[in-house]
Amino acid sequence: MQKSAENLFLHADGDSFFVACEVSQHPEYIGKPVVVGEDRGIAVAMSYEAKKLGVTRGMPVFKIKKQFPSVVILPHHFDLYRKISKNVHDILLSYLEEVEVYSIDECFATVKQSDIRFAGSADELVKSIKDEIQNTLNVTYSFGLGRTKALAKTASKLNKPNGMVILTNIKDEEQALKKTSIDDIWGIGRRTVPRLRDMGMKTAYDFVHYNSDYIKKYFSSPLFHLQQELSGSSIYELDPNADPRDQKSIQSTATFKPSTNDLQIIFTELSSNVERACEHARSLGLMTNFISFFIKNTDFIHHVGSSHLTLYTTDPGIILNKLEPLLYELVSKLKDNEKIRSTGITLHNLRKYENVPRDLFGVQDGYEAKNIIEEVSDRIREKFGHDALKRASSLKVAKKENRS
Ligand SMILES: [Mg+2]
Image 1 (cartoon, rainbow, N blue to C red):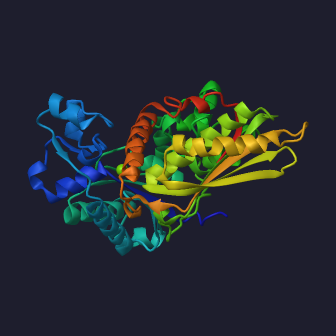
Image 2 (tube, rainbow, N blue to C red):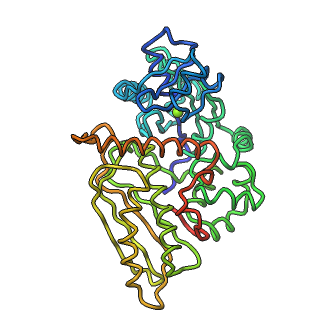
């Protein structure tokens, strides 16, 4: 469904959000190297000063203490982050009617022409919101304004921290797209980037100007939609009431070629979906204790399996251990000429990390220690791309046709 061309989208993104929240409560830390993550034993977030010193995400706390004794190391205070996040949401709502909470430190909002007229200009509107957040909450956000959600999201990244990028004409849009690497485009899947690079695309600008019929024909429809979004046709709608942490399930599916009945290949495919779903759940601070999966043959017939887990987790290893025998059973029952073309996994019963019951014997805590390792892996993927780190079982993935 097309949105009215009149509307613009705003994207707001907190700068080093967890650390900024801590510093907002402790003015004595202003300008100091600060790290959050003492309770996890690793650096989960750090101030720009700490980054400058050389502290990196995932660095063990003991190492930071030894190498950088001046760094202030703090535990997480999720209640504080949620409170500030809610206050930011309220400030946005005082200026704009429709606001979507995208994550703890990111929001999208619809900006109508009447909002802009009321403020005087798009610049003045965004600046007022930005200043109010900074002055009342003592944290900074970076902003992007554009004709579509994908353009707004691209814009907010360009002048971090504490920046704002307003894209209201084609020339500015083109410049923004040229400055955005193909690796940094929001929503391009991990397996797609190398394919686009092979086709000669280096920036978002190259992607937008690539033959869209070709993209439509040879790639999944989400990629075609993204190309439309980045070229200024609004496809993604605002979801004003969504709290992504309220979702009850997360799914990851993929179609592959050629179709096969090889257990190893099917397991590898499924494994890759499990990793992706778990990574998404971890990014939202959600955990699962019930999983289901399917394998689908070339006649679009589904075979399904499911399993309860004893505890809540987002550890792909634990989930795959449960899935392996179930998958083996399904594959062994396939008819001789039956070939599988896609697999999918759903994590059900999602529960917020902070609401997961702690059991008496510390087993849940053991699970969480494993999750820390996974979290560090996520950071490395974030930094070096999705293919930088993969579980051995996901390595031999067949050529992707579609992933969602
Ligand atoms: Mg942020």
